[in-house]
Figure 1 (cartoon, one colour):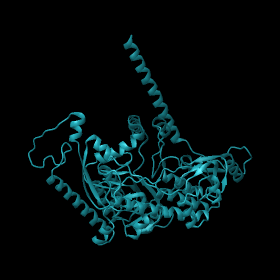
Figure 2 (cartoon, helix red, strand yellow):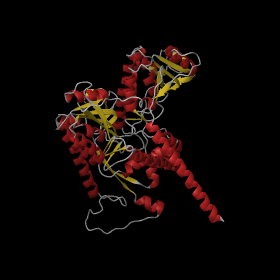
Figure 3 (cartoon, helix red, strand yellow):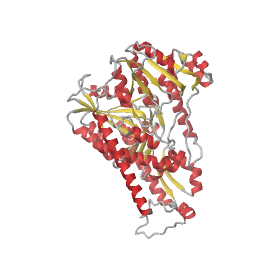
Figure 4 (cartoon, one colour):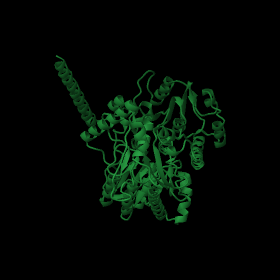
Length: 583
């Protein structure tokens, strides 16, 4: 009888899964084929309460995946920018409504959105912003709005930026794991979390300079938007003068204290709708499917998006695989319809070998057609390696870049395996260095020197290629290298960046370099979107991995992922000296 019920319930479960899967596939196909229509007198709603990535695939199962993993699904920066641009001249769109309590993006990505909104205002259409709570990143976007409404019982944060680094040295000591470190560069502190319990003075110095540079841009731009002196706004921030919602109103950071229904009333007045009438509001996801951003043209600019950690091979979700990326550059180089290439980079770096593989393809492409680098929020270390061979490098003032340095970590797990798991090792080798890169024993001085020499050669290779790409002497390059991280402003002053600007500026430079007039080309994006069923399987696999990790480690999942990344990466690393989280 037990066997019968076991078979019965297993069959029932399989049947349920089959019908759910069939329904989702059918719904996904239907959603892809359905035409999106935008109503008259509409508002474009920009809701930034989820991670912003450079480009997303059209995932018909995003909401289902979010339900399973309890993780917000990403939104595409490309879709946001194109939607704002199109709404500017769309007669059906009467204004933009901003819902930006907390923006999950880097400062350069936020800058792109903010600048697009400023351009939108030239149409004469209004921008309304409302929130119960404005964080500094959310307020930075909202500060361009015509009306900024703050809930009377809410809060506006204007306290300045801070950055926190997580250290694992204590954890490794408890586990009897010894990280064996090899690095070049005073500021190459990516390894510090594994050998220290606090920041070195060099690390503190560069983070302090970087934060103040980023915050300087933040203060200057908000001051211009709100008609406040920058010195006054800085004092408001430094002295925490905004402690109540009334303070935010008195200092002119918001235009009104009010509730959501009052914002709806404003929207009805703008659209001419009667009191109580439903306001047509379109999300970016919906609106971006209602138009084609670029008209068909045989002249094309390839936009190759590189986002995530740099790894060898194919890579995956959230990483840049050198094989895939190099293939895309090669494809664009050999395609006669592609007149120029824009590399859109949002990466803290990763494998030195993978970075060099992609650098080579950039060099080859540069000989045939213009190649322009557009730096997003982070284009550092390996991210900078990808950009340094380009004809022109474009970065936002608050882009995090530079970090020209290199390191390697080989963990010694022998004590951990012995004391914690009772596992020991023994070996027989044919040569003195046959097991040079083992993790089952500590390295001797001779072996350590071999690896250190390899790191130094890698640094010499990195810096010499950077100097060549930037038309600098090696001494000039070394003065701004050593693993030091710079803001976009500082990078331009130091010759590491050519132009301060955004993605559109990079595309315009690419078009001009290729001799193309405005409207005489179209943008094509790579990597191309996957076929529907391949995307379905990929998303299901990703969701399962996220769900497993979240349920296994709970709130510690992010820290475990960070530890896994550094401890599992093999070979030399060109990676940013810290996982910088500015908040």
